[in-house]
Image (cartoon, rainbow, N blue to C red):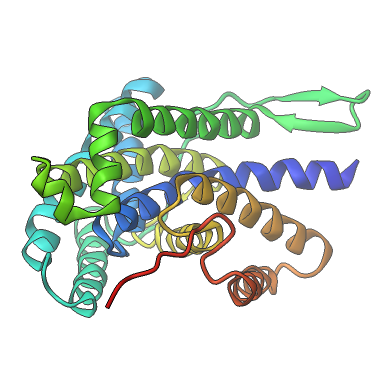
Amino acid sequence: MAFLSYLINGLSLGSVYAIIALGYTMVYGIAKMLNFAHGDIMMVGAYVAFFALNSFGLPVIPSVLLAMLACTVLGVVIERLAYRPLRQAPSLAVLITAIGVSYFLQNGAQLLWSSSTKVFPSVVPAGSVQLFGGQLSISYLTIVTILICIAVMICLTLFINRTRTGKAMRACAEDKGAAVLMGINVDRIISITFAIGSGIAAIAAVLLCSTYPSLSPTLGSMPGIKAFTAAVFGGIGSIPGAFLGGLLLGVIEILSKAYISTQLSDAIVFAVLIIVLLIKPTGLLGRKISEKV
């Protein structure tokens, strides 16, 4: 029964990683760039939700929506000011810019809100569901986190596959040049991609801070790296891959902490990633793309 409890907790943590990883994989799949400031955009969303809940006394849902709006606007502004001018630049220049934006957001958060750690209030009522005569206890927060991850994944999949904008996104991911010839505004599609990825990062921020209620300007650093690892694990550029990679990463991390070592859990996670990439370089659900030269 202990193993089942660890497994459920791993799925809960993995759900947060999966939601964050969706932002990484969408941007890479369409813009072919790694937005390493994504975790820090999530951090800004956590602060907005924190002050909406504590300082303004807003209910949970309006606070989360406000955080989503702030992250969406921030993501679009960053794409417009920092990344769009580098559309034709070498990938190294874009990577360095992304790291610079990350540090800018972290230091800006320190100036605005100080570097002291704040305690984030839980957005889900305390309590748990008791199963098997009380042998297995699942908290409401765990259930809500998993359900929200599934809902986000379903909504995003339907949007990509069923809407006109979603089809334009798939066209841009396949061939930007051909998409332009078909009348698609590639810059607009990339901005929408940043908006969606940044917006859902705010949801992950609230769930993460509810699980680990320590809020600081460096909040997005380690979860951001692990979410990027999850995206690579599942196959960077693949939305189902980000979902699967996030869940597996969360399960591996929790089981490693439970049965091996809390100090070595992160090392084990990255070691598993290395092994998977050695066996399947494109990730679990990634596909190999051949380019003519």
